Length: 123
Image (spheres, rainbow, N blue to C red):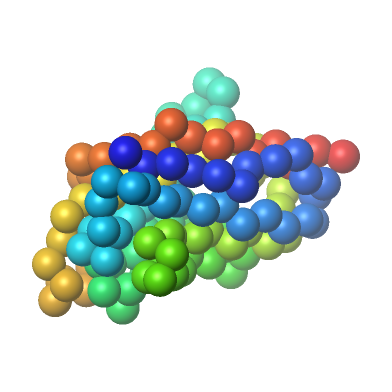
């Protein structure tokens, strides 16, 4: 039910913005996580945002370079990725889990997943 977009080939130091949207859910009521998986590596959660948008969290590997944000009017959650490195190369997935708006925290498991979008950082 979730659809990611925005993946591409980009040079080191470049930027990309990934989008996570859906036609089946109102993302306002869902905590959203962005994950990535590189070949031969385990899946890693890189960022998450609470349903209200009041809480965000980032993996140490992306802190200061990636920003997660909601656009309620577009029913979309974005992941802005700056200063990209070759080690950011992976398939990026978004995931959603229903969450009461008063919970200002990320979740530990997700019910809905997208199919992923490829990000390749290479010169």
